Length: 249
Image (cartoon, rainbow, N blue to C red):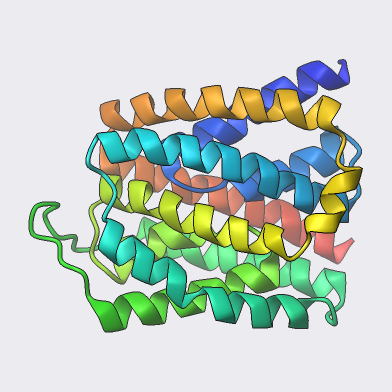
């Protein structure tokens, strides 16, 4: 199968995940770029940030139009994680790669298991920002995002659902705001590495991801929040198992 076709297929899947589930873009994009398209891990991380930023902003616009974004809480959640993300990112460069991969797998599995547990959610019309809880959860997410080098949606959605009692649609929409902020902050620290990105692959990948995000948004309006939550958990468990196997080999 040609590189272009692989890029289009992988991009479509990444966009579908971001649009429907509010996360999973970096988690899916990095392995696809490495194992399907032959990118080095460093190049794949930078390229995935470019892809996820473009796709997340597109999906954020769609969810904002539908009223699914809680801007005040989302902004507080995202801003609280910027400094911890920078500090953790600096520390990550000193840790062995297998350790980081294993930590990534453990965190993804823990988030998936928590998502599979029933949680009490608040009605979308009565949700209010909880500054202390939002800031604490955002700081923790930022640290993990900086350490693991991903946008953080696969952690933001469970945190918004379980810590802040968001219903699933609001968690998905708001997580896209958090993903966009985290990814932009991460990309700003590695701007020089974008010079080596293969735009002949990243361009089609990003275009397919943007189209997939719109399809994912439509899917999210037709499927119940509980089903989306279970689907998201299954995706995380599969990714966790794959990355754990990679860390141990």
